[in-house]
Length: 241
Ligand code: ADP
Ligand code: MG
Ligand code: MG
Image (cartoon, rainbow, N blue to C red; front, side, top):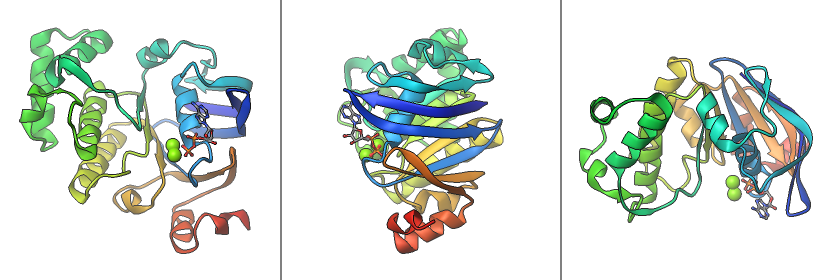
């Protein structure tokens, strides 16, 4: 599904990713952990094709196709969905309108079909439907923003879902909802790359593999035992491997 091969990335002339390789197979859930500033968001944004991140070496393959230089919109159309750490606020566009537009653009659904899908998903995920009438992200709490993003991901049903710290700054209920959507999509066959700073969300999930990134390099890959070790001894302990 996704193959990142010896990826080196510069931002404003500074090398941030220093040769990252990882492969996420069909339907796998991979977790990327690491201290602040290690390059986690850079990795996510580079896979999504953010123009600020300059690939200086290596490549990104998606379903066997080299997407390293593909515009971000095309990556979205191919089935890559990135949940942002800091979503944008749009005054004047209601959540329902926004979601209808997304479903029209990506799936070709008309307004009525989209409305039905959105309404059903809101019920299924146990969200408060009043969220649909609010302006996009305006005045949303951290938890509400994340819930909306997860709703969007659930509707879009991407082939590859990249989540950048969906668990940061959310309460226990939001965390459960986020984990629930990840599990549902995972069960439906979506491949997932989950970036997280904490191990807490992983109590609800079954990762295929865990990677630890430090200063732009993957310093360890393994199973959930890595998470336990980090929880107990901190990221510093991973260096010793
Ligand atoms: P993480 O998500 O692991 O906290 P980031 O990928 O956000 O780490 O950042 C890694 C490094 O790259 C940091 O030193 C950060 O300052 C730098 N960096 C990331 N994005 C930008 C940017 N858009 N402009 C300048 N520096 C950036
Ligand atoms: Mg950070
Ligand atoms: Mg980050």
